[in-house]
Each structure stands twice: as C-alpha cells, then as structure tokens.
Amino acid sequence: MNIIRFEDLVAQGQAEGKRVFIRADLNVPLDDAGNITEDTRVRASVPAIELALKAGAAVMVTSHLGRPTEGEFKPEDSLAPVAKRLGELLGREVKLVSNWVDGVDVAPGQVVLLENCRLNKGEKKNNEELAKKLAALCDIFVHDAFGTAHRAEATTYGIAQFAKVASAGPLLAAEIDAISKALEAPKRPLIAIVAGSKVSTKLTILESLSKNVDGLIVGGGIANTFMLAAGLKIGKSLAEADLVGAAKAVIASMKARGAEVPIPEDVVVAKTFAADAPATVKAATDVADDDMILDIGPKTAAKLAAQLKAAGTVVWNGPVGVFEFEAFEQGTKAIAQAIAESSAFSIAGGGDTLAAIAKYGIEDKVGYISTGGGAFLEVLEGKTLPAFEILSKRAAG
Image (cartoon, rainbow, N blue to C red; front, side):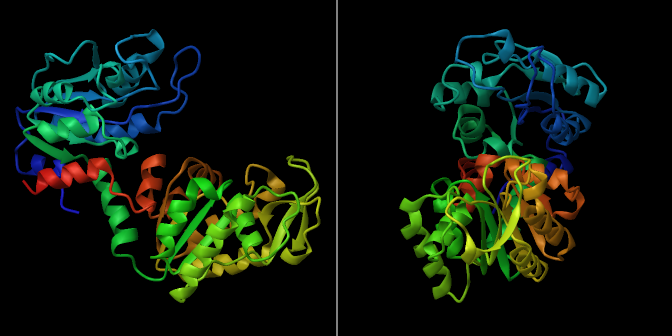
C-alpha cells in the first residue's frame, strides 16, 4: 500500500518548524476517580510525538476518550489524566488545550494535547466545515491511531482529505506493513484462527478468509456451530443452529480449494458454565445432551499445534475455549505455545486474543500484535479501511 510515512518526512527534514497534528489513540480505561488503569495506548503514542519534537516541529496531539455527547463537556470526558501521564512519559509538561478548533498556540519544539476531539460538533459525522478547520491548523497531518482507522470521522478522515500533507505515523505504518505481509503477500501455508462465541459476528470474516487461507481453525461457540454443520451433536453448547448452512458453505468453499476447516476430534465438556465445574475430555462423537463444550480436547489441540508449527503465516483472532477458567484453558494455551514456537510470521488482534497472549507470556514471540479490535476485524473481512484509503489517495497526489 502506497502511503506517505511521517518517518520519511522527518528524515527528509520536512517537519522542522512545521505545525504537526497527530491523531493518536489515547482512549484508555479510567477508574471512578479518573485515574488511568491501563496505559498501553498512551505509551504506544510516544514514538510519533518524540519523532515530531526531535524534528523541531510544533506538535498538537488529539484523541477521543469514551463516548461523549458532541458539544457538551463533562469532566469525565476530559483528557486531563492522559495529559498528566503523557507528560510523565515525555519528561515535560503537556498542556491541555480546550476549544481548539479555531486556532492553537504552540511553538516549534513544544507539544500540546487538544481536548477530546469527540466533543467537537460534527466529529463523528466527518463534517466538511469542521474537517477544513482542522486541516488549517497544521502543515502535516499524522494518523497514528489504528484503532480508529475503520471510522471516517473529522480527525481520522476529513483532516487527511484537506491537510497540506497527510501521513501515517509509526504505529499506523507498522499495522499497514504487518497486515500487508499477512494477507496481501503471505508466506504459505496461511493459517487463520477465528474464534469467539458467535458465527454471526464473524461470518463475513470467515467467508472472506475461506477464499484465501490454506487452513481455517475455528474455536469457541463458532466451532460448535461448525460441529453441527459436520453432523455432530453438541449437547447444550453455545451455537447458532440457524447458521449451519453458512458454516457448511465456508467448509465447501475451503474444500473446493483443497483447504480445510479442521472439525474438533475431541472436546472438553462440563455440565455447567463455571470455573469449578468438573471437566471431562470426550470424543467429539460422544457429547451428551446435557454437556457444554468449553474447550477443544488434547488430540485436537495437538493436531492444530502441529499445523501451526508448519505454517508460513498465522493470523489469530480469538481464544479456542474458555481460557479464563483453568480447567478449560489447555486448548488456547496449546495454540498460543504453538504460535510462539512456530517460525511463521504471526499477527494477532482482538481483546480476548491479547489477554491470552499476556496470560501465556508470548508477547515477544508473536510477529505483530495489532492494537485495533474493530479495525483488525474489518481488515480480516477484506474491507478497505477509510484511513488507509484516504492516506493512499493522498500519497498518489
């Protein structure tokens, strides 16, 4: 994908003395007292800001936080806690600026944080008048918020349309590179793991991937629906009987290309959904009417692990069992360890997937961990994200 990279602009000396507007993703969780409980996104935004500051630019940074009502400021919607944390990470004071749409006072070598961009009327609907005002604030726009790349809003799309120069920051550029490597020109075999509670939320992803991947591993409630499609009984497990036809179509689409959707050979079942429920390993053909399937069994896990270790590229979205419960975590743990040991290029995304990666301590063994949940899923669906589209359009002149 052809984009202008902010790092290249800096290397060419094009950012010195210029007004740089960075759209970051600083949407962090806060407790009731307004303290940040998890600051990964703030830390991830620092490289782009430091790059601009070292280049001698006048730096403006903004982000959304939560879901405020446009035009109505409430203290809990303020980026004040983020300004404080950003200041600590940058080792300098970061001033928070409110009512900034009509002009920002910032000098080269300085950085300011612009208050929650979703407070601006017209932000979510990408109002053209607002977008033009935002574009007028800067010489260079830097999109560095992959988590918002699937939304066409004033600070993610409109500003890129009208700014003198629109570029991708280091975080966004890394996402684009990883996604291109995994999906546009993958080293084969390409194996995708798509797991979760419902087929309905991931059906378009399954359909899109079935046209491209060499192996499609399904897990969780999705696997139960595929087991139904394969004619197996699943007891009282979570599944969507009305989507059995869709599951069969995905299996057929893969089979036509000589690829497969491995159906579990064995499963781990319980009578109730609870952390302390006794777990029993059963053959997939022996599930009783009152059983709930909560994980894949050891034979299935070993077979899938061997497939992942032999892969060239792995795309991972979703745990294959209820990994939060110790008795039902072995499948997800085996998958995680196989990905960690595989020489394949791996890209993982989605909240539960990141939680599993953290639980099993394999962060440094995954090729790329995607920071955007919704955006990552839309890429897997085969959609062109609005942010990618406009940055690529602007790079083409």
